[in-house]
Amino acid sequence: MSLPPSTNLGTAHEGDECPVPIPAWERTERLGDQVLADPGRRWPGERDWSRHREVIEAECYMLRPRYHEDRQFSWTRWKLPRSWFEDWQRWNIVSAYVLDATRIVDGKQVFLKRLPANRTPEEAEITALFSSEQYRRHPKNHCVPLLETKRLEELSETLLVFPRMRPYNNPRFRTFGEFVAFATQIIEGLELMHELHIAHRDCTGQNIVLDPSGMYPNSFHPIKMNRTKDFHWIAKSYTRTQRPPRYYLIDFGLSRYYDPANGVPMDDAIRGGDKSAPEFRDYFNGVVHNPFPTDIYYIGNLLRTDFIQKYYGFEWLEPLAADMCHEEPSMRPPIGVVASRFAEVSGALTSWKLRSRLVGRKDSFILGPFRWIRHVYRTTGYILTRTPAVPMPRDEGRSRERDTSKTA
Image 1 (cartoon, rainbow, N blue to C red):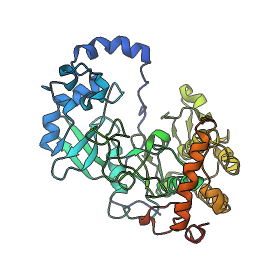
Image 2 (image 1 turned 45 degrees about the vertical axis):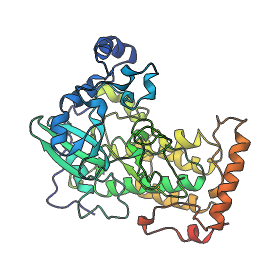
Image 3 (image 1 turned 180 degrees about the vertical axis):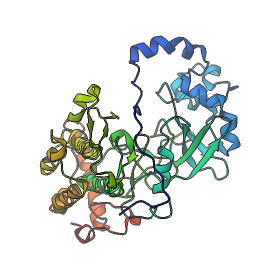
């Protein structure tokens, strides 16, 4: 498979690196006075959104009341904890390029991402590619859908608009079948990217999300995700098995297209959210490497740290995760082999195993029996209603035969 001739994704640019994060203690020292001086205790990045609120609203997107410059904050009128009020809820970040918003025309909950002209120039093009007519309905496409792109001339920025999403692990996974559905989709999504000769270069847990539209039909608050969007009540929700979500890869700021005509792709190391890859040991020595095996490492390390080491019962996944995290990048299996091997090992799991509850290694022994009783009650309902053990979203159109046939 090759890219459309009209698609110009650019090439890697020397020096394209993530900024080094400021240590927490130094950040507090530098910004403490600024934050305290703001009645809303808004971080500098938040105040930047506030200053440009009118520009954003002119494009038909409404920011939360917290970001109104002339806002009289609710907690100033009541002798109650600030955390009880909606307009106190803030992103725990210093510099924000991403913020939640509401589309004025229909009330749709969205995320906005501002791209300065001199920052990650390929991101908008790669994001748009996977939302194009050619790829948006591709069965392996698990790149976040792009709703709209706007040019903010006053700010010399591009505004990307995405549907409201949740972290992939919020709420927690309850069964092995739910995990299999998640891993299958993410491996497929990365497989399509690699088939198109695009390396994600930061496909870590913080850049994987789920579409909550089924699990949270009435939406939720963007900061306190267990609350309703007006912050008054607990949000109504369903499990992943009841309303199977679709998982997406996000944030293509470090992603690059590599022309296969140029041979094996070699590029400077760019460290994303996971800095543990063995090839990063020579990060400061200017050693180039193939970014595609690093993508394999990221997914393998995600499986290892977020599931194998966190829950009991994942021994069947350990050999594959170990190969994906091999010390030598050239020894890691390509994504097509990863997909085949995962389908093989997960396909060998019994329906009993797939419906079994995920038990965390640090779970409370006191709450364990109560969670087990609740799990048995739910599972009995799933079996009686013939709900598949591996909850794939309906639009996948390719549920495995044994998932729909094995219900016991």
